[in-house]
Image (tube, rainbow, N blue to C red; front, top):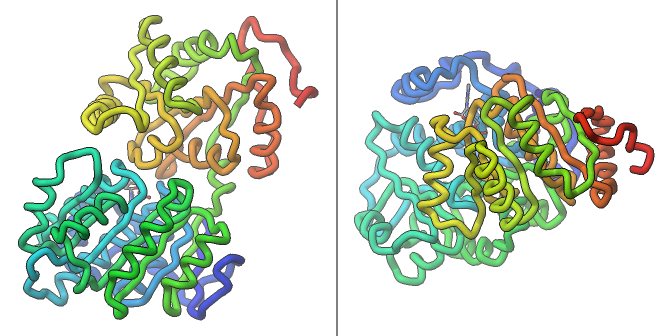
Length: 408
Ligand code: AMP
């Protein structure tokens, strides 16, 4: 993994790789975190901080704004959660009614609840209260949780604005603002909501801004929000592909289901995430697998919160080792030990391919990604191979016509 810190304000749209100016600490002990936090990370089995943690924690502890160019899987949640918890405890204040000291914005409910879980895990022995706020579940219990004030609110933008409108949450005393997965916020159409929320925050605050990629609009937003930020960049998106063994199967669209079933019985026999382009496609694939005796669940935006949570739990605890997901639904899935990713459909945005395959081979584990490519998807494959600067080797499945790459 590469990493970088810059201490002056850089051109946000044009990240460059620099060597850190100070040698990075090697252990959590050197990060000057509260002993309860050190105990919690130890209990989680973390032995060394990940590069983003090494680079970001000292700056966040010092109260600096941060621009983190990093994707899920790099340990970015702990990179902001640990120093935030430390700062809250180092300077405890009485919480006013409906106020919060920290606001973390996340694009999806799954990611929001995972971030809240991380705060809970790391802060379990600290006097810190948190609440998670997202749509799709009833408003009342969330409002009651917020009533007497909480230290940390993790929220998706829409429901957060509902609470602000109803007066159940006020941002007047928010000291730290975290925007996570800013590029996904843009993709999901949340930019206006974010600007509305930012306008309600006090001027004097610490801002932490995370994004896997830096399209122009996100660079502009970062430029508006951040004051002299420390900048940390880990593993540019295309690099993830290096750690995952990748294969492509060329086939006709009509053969995909049967080939998927074969892959799932012969090759991808561990916990496997299957990606489909559409919600309906994800359902159909899961149904087909179920009928063929391969237990599978689908997860996408049309499923209820309860269905999504049940599917995720079954996947996490191994009761159902195949999960079929759309890109957006998969955003917040934080499950270690995904051995295989199968792209049932290739994504039309090449970066999505890198995000998808990044779901496997996490924390140094082995992983394999197999993509099914029908004739209509050759252009997508070409774009992906250009982005990752690799030609993905072909996997021959019995019964498939060989050597179809030339047509790509
Ligand atoms: P994130 O990028 O925040 O989604 O984190 C990805 C995964 O890495 C999560 O499952 C974390 O529990 C795990 N993790 C975070 N920090 C460390 C660390 N220092 N050592 C090992 N695992 C970690």
